[in-house]
Amino acid sequence: MPYHLILWAQAHGTAETEPVDKFNPTTPHGGEIIAAAIFFLLLFAIIVKVALPKLNATLAAREQALSGQLTEAERVRSEADQVLAEYRARLADAQSEANRIIEEGRRTQEAIIGDARTRAEAEAQALLQRAQSDIQAERDRALAALRSELASLSIELAGKVVGQSLNTEAQRALVEGYIDQLASRN
Figure 1: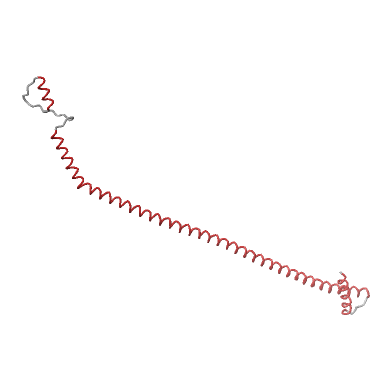
Figure 2: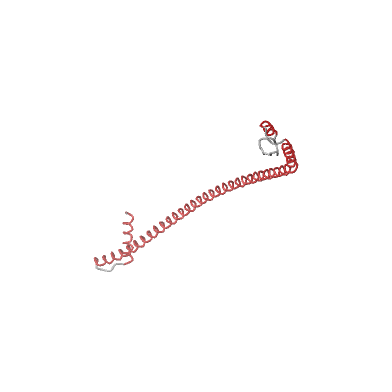
């Protein structure tokens, strides 16, 4: 029975026949405090000796794993940056190669067009010269045929006018000479 209850009971004049044990959480007994302190120190020693090393080892392993993962992530990032730089360099090379091919295609196109234009102009000039020489030849043939026909008609007309047959060869030479004189005036 707590001490203060005993004092209260004596002060009020009650006789104590049976000790009354009432639990009071605000005022523990001295033996309870000592037992709790011993249990706390024993539990603290067990935690320090058993659980704390395991906890420290687990934390160290976790820290080492995170450090390894961080190092690996840095290495992967560095490789990714290197691959990206290589990709960009290849892309720039491919772009410059494509531009070079396009420019070469343009130059080839211009050369082909220039060659075709030159050939077409040469063919047109040759065709024009052929046509002109064909025209000249046809003109010469037409003039020769016209002279021959004109000479024949002149001889025939002169024969009818004179009334006698003229020497055809002599007359033809005379008429052709006259036609040549007329042609040279024009």
